[in-house]
Amino acid sequence: MSIFPESGIEFNFSQAITAEQFDAVNRAFPSVDFLVTDAHGQLWVEVKSWRIKRFPTRNRGGQRRSFLAKMRLGKEAPFPRDLREKFLGTCTQLTLTGNPPAISILYVMVVESDHPLDSQLRVHLMDRMRQQLRTNARHNPWAFPISVAVVDVAEWNALLSSYPARIL
Image 1: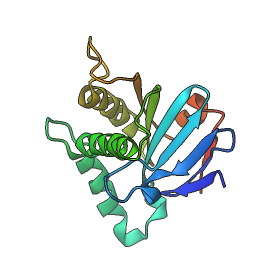
Image 2 (image 1 turned 180 degrees about the horizontal axis):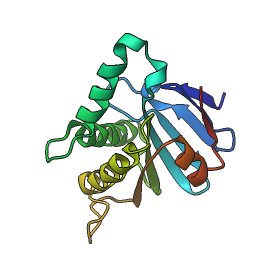
Image 3 (image 1 turned 30 degrees about the vertical axis):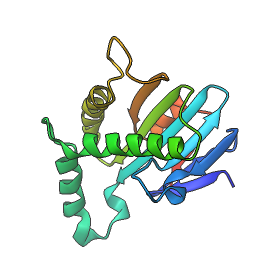
């Protein structure tokens, strides 16, 4: 099966060479939600949805506060650190199972929310993730090329049209 639901979003990876719900396979380390391989390299996908309409009315305010707290600015913002740990956990798991990353990786974080102004927070998160993973470093510390993108579902569909996604 190559159609996967995650956090109220459905992804269709039927055009991929391989696709797996990696966090279901890897329980030893924090890891990305999906690991997809195609002719261009690997796509590592982490999905976070704070679409308020998915939650009961009594929990909606708490979800909005949770989103803003995770996206807050500053050196010790928890969200970029958590996403970096998922990247490193995925690298570790693949290496320990004899499949170390050796091809280009596009690490995509799908961050979906109801508020139009949150797009600016996604831009900030993408900059923070590039700093966390040192993809902007003059001398790449990784043995493989890494690209980072932080998108919502509409941007996902524009960027990765081979793998359509839809909100459930």
